[in-house]
Image (tube, rainbow, N blue to C red):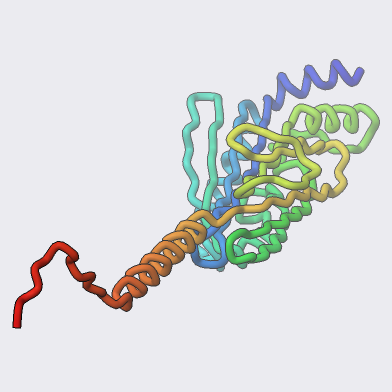
Length: 250
């Protein structure tokens, strides 16, 4: 019955794939970092239509009502029945750690990210912790409610057909994580919407600050060169007598 419900859900409501990406981008030489946030949706059917409407309405409302914080930029590359949406923005490390209201993303929970950045002068250590509530997005009109066993099975089948992948990009070398390696040097967590429970995503990395290393090497070379030139300038000049020379007579 669950398999039949899954086929029915796919046929009626379509497929849905959600990808959320948080990428930490360190500032060269200067302390701190920025975070690039993205929400990507690939969908079709009623779910895709409903989510597209929710995301575009959220973006328009944020611009007209002057919501606080950096606004999301929405790019719509939909093709016919296929929905291809991308929301993105780049924020400071401080703003990235502020909870993102689901009303600004069309009902998605992008998670509350906490980043601890330790500056070790020539290297930096980043420790990331994200708490995500794996909940279903805004559902379209006609989605069954959980009033009886059949409706519950159909609702579960709809959630099972939704894929939710969470990506985190860390600079440098990853030293610890409970995620999986993914493309473009990112980490990925495959979230299960049917569980309804929170997930805690963790990752740590060490980032060698190459600009600072290069500046340090240049300073060492310049200082060493200045010391060598100064020592040569202070060295006394001695003139040795020429043994083959004829001395003048008195």
